[in-house]
Length: 274
Image (cartoon, rainbow, N blue to C red; front, side, top):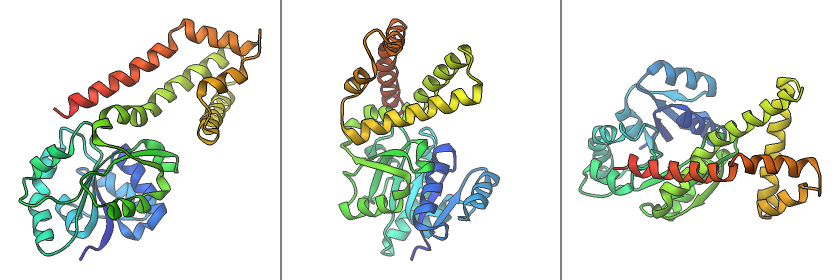
């Protein structure tokens, strides 16, 4: 019988964000982690209060949900390593659910690398780093997992933010729209703050004003359900300063750059899975 509800193999930036969310949601006593650099896992465990083990196999033995938080090119090796333990545990009647957050790696590829006679439940997810503070967006591809297990996973990770269940055929594109966009937003905010500094606003105040404005704008889109274009129009008074700024953004190709950024990231996700 498993000792922990959820175990994490890999504690990089994304894995650590989900560890924090899980510890807030179900309590650190139900969470275990490991990392190829033990000191990194130990530092995170000290911060959040969860447990540490030294091997991937031990995470599998002791956990019901196994979070595979490793890079796409490392995932095949990890799957081959843990496959015998997964088989041993499932042969003994223990339920093991594998959860992959590796961009571009399909569920079919995961099953091929596991190479087991019977298919264990697999969830493929695409989270983003704001999950660490409960503001994340996690996409879930539930095709290879029973609905009740998906429900359980969402309950475990409820403190990470929002969830959406979509078909794996949308994985690469939707993953770019949620997983990559925080980095794009940080770059956008940094540029806006630089503009404010250029105009004379102190740096720290500029960052605060811009971040709060972006947070408020995003919240208004989600809560109102209105199209961003309509909300933009509501801010732009005729002959006012905002429409001048909009003109400058359009002149610089912001809209086209955003389209190309997401499309390019989606294409890269496809390549990662090959």
